[in-house]
Image (cartoon, rainbow, N blue to C red; front, side):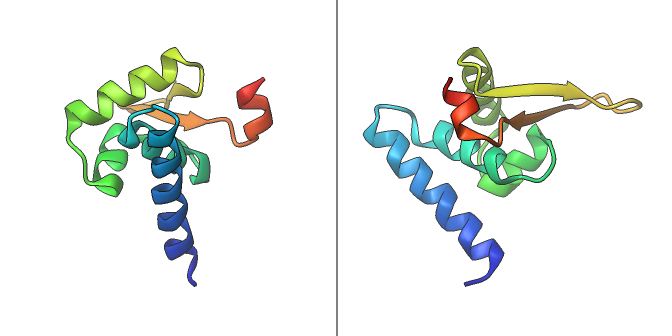
Length: 94
């Protein structure tokens, strides 16, 4: 299994777990993508990676930020917002 295949399987599995916990599948997939990303991603990168609409990406990112699971940052000279999740799941759940 390649790294990309493993990443995709994790995103799909996290999405399925989220839906069993009563969380929107796409929201869980956005969270999973940010968990495994080595660096913060823009909304455009998230949309492209998960093949979702801008509205869907923005709505789920806002909800994840409201829950404290995702944070955003700005990069100097770039107008876009970048999003990241705490990599240590125990810290995120504390």
